[in-house]
Length: 396
Image (tube, rainbow, N blue to C red; front, top):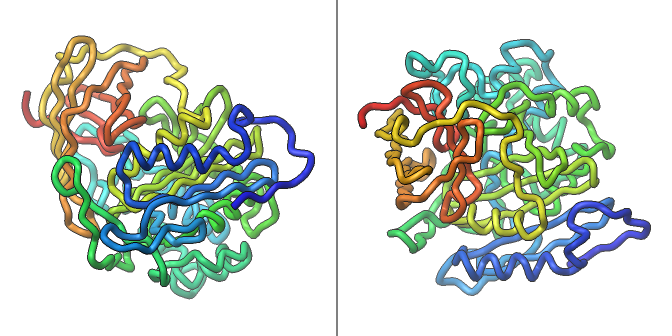
């Protein structure tokens, strides 16, 4: 489906002809083997959407542009929008929403000694913000989200209960296979960090509001979300948004990954542009990054110079809770293997040994594979940030 408006000015993606999104998405799915994908681009009021693949392997039902997917951590900018519309922005709220509260990823337990003050991705901060919103509004978090954000924006296909006709998530089976998740019981307490179901169309409507269109979130709150709060992995994090440079333009985005789904919402204010890519596979990050690359929106290398890192100095085993990574020196780069447990399904995700090359400023990046486009760094001796989480080294 393509909807066009007149008078569109030139901007990002103009090198890609109208209608090419479908071609790009189909090629990316063919290369990655993801079961299903839906995607859309908003450019100055022009919306182009497409879909390819199936809702679940072994079944014939096709993914459509309006198919609901679990969008996982794309829920975070929604939660940040609600929190900043309902609560005063104090240091505590800013720390929860910027992953600087010192929490571990899946609990409010403090990070290990030596990691004080570091940015480390934490779902627990969003759970704390959700509880604070519920108290302030005198209702449940879900009711507050529906009344203050989803309803005013007309996001009828977005919510916390699994809708009919949704794409089914697929987790890893072996090195190349998929296994459908038979049931997706997402705990209510986790919803502020990643519980939303949504569609390409609804996410583009949310993006249009974040880009300056009408809606319930005050302009000052939207601006506060895009203020950098902490450097991380060669970029910065605001309140519910990653802040990056994409092909020479300021951009903000958030990925989502849980229960066999991976997704991306990317916005480029300079070009009044938004991109949504939703997949029903843990292997969807490769597809997402191929689409981003083909549209000319890949993140730029770190702009700020910094001290380099010698691969042999950071080789070792890094472990915290359910996440483990091994790092090996390989020439001027690294070989990295990561194992983690999905917090919803309990399924394990183990990546093969992937090469990571130095990007500058102590940041390394993966050029391909399941982690294509992801970054890692070593912010302090004996500490790594892999999978966005601070992990202490336990051996060499």
